[in-house]
Image (cartoon, rainbow, N blue to C red):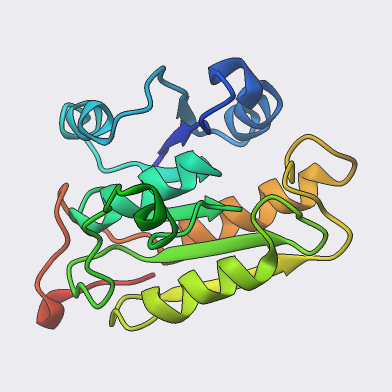
Length: 187
């Protein structure tokens, strides 16, 4: 099990937006990192410098970064909270290069807020439909009555606990890159 969690904020937020979640996970014994940065390669370098692959949790644009890092085989598992769609940026001329059926991708949980008007559940479900083509564990969870700001509204603890429980349960026990499909170990 990974004891390190890396929190990746969205485009309009900063690391202090994670303070409540960071405190909650630290109280549970996790080492929690919330680095500044919005570029995938920046997070890639930080992850590779760690002694163990972290659990990755990102919100909105940070959720897209989590998916990109997992696609590179980084992390023990990942959670995308109301993540920007992996194909939606093509409208802006920005491709993500995510290879959804990637067998080296660590486990991924996609979370939606049922009342999210920014990244509606239908968009998160569409991302789930693409990502579940990977042989790695892939799951979708929608929280009723929750908006885009799942972790900043009443009941955020339920979302936080579900995310870390799923990610911990499904985390790969491997180096920074995923094991070959024949040697995958899930617990």
